[in-house]
Amino acid sequence: YTNPCARGLVESAIFDLFDEGLGKVKREREGEFPTFQVNRGILPADQRKRGNTVFSQAFEKVGKLPDKYPLLSAAAKGVGLMFWEIKFEGEGGVDYGGLFRDSLREICAELQCHGALQLLVPCPNNKYAVALNQDKWILNPARNSERNLAEYAFIGRILGASIHTKSSIELDLAPHVWKQLLGQAPTLEDILA
Image (cartoon, rainbow, N blue to C red):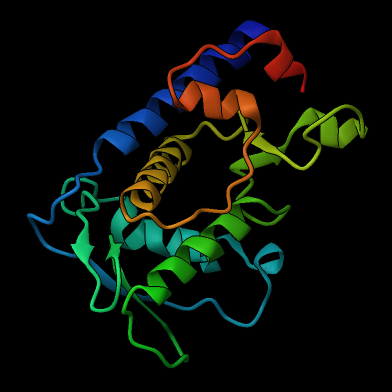
């Protein structure tokens, strides 16, 4: 979008969906707990086709059904909390919380690469190799289809899941993106950085 007003409207809608996704996250397990299997294959995150990403597979299993699977936290069989139980096809392991956290790491890697998803793009400072935060990511305003908007809401739910389960999440968003997610107005300094 070259028009700043249009870009602002799209970004505003995307942030609203993030907030909606975060709002659907509940702290207590009250309903069906999702258990599913994904195939991450042998390719690194940036070489996977869209449908083969862990993000897309998780979205198909639980992300498209926020009312059925509102990401209700449950005590893991091991230590801590998790919002889904996952098995990686062709790999050993029982999810005692570690595979759940591994799935979050995979999803973050897929979101922050030049691969098939393209829901996040490098901030402009990266493109021009100037100023701060060249390693940060922003929302891609060109991804505004109905499916993309549902995927942004799912990212919001994943952020909420990481917060509620105290699982660190490796999502390097630009400062102005974090501020908007927190309901704070970004400053000119945030945007320029």
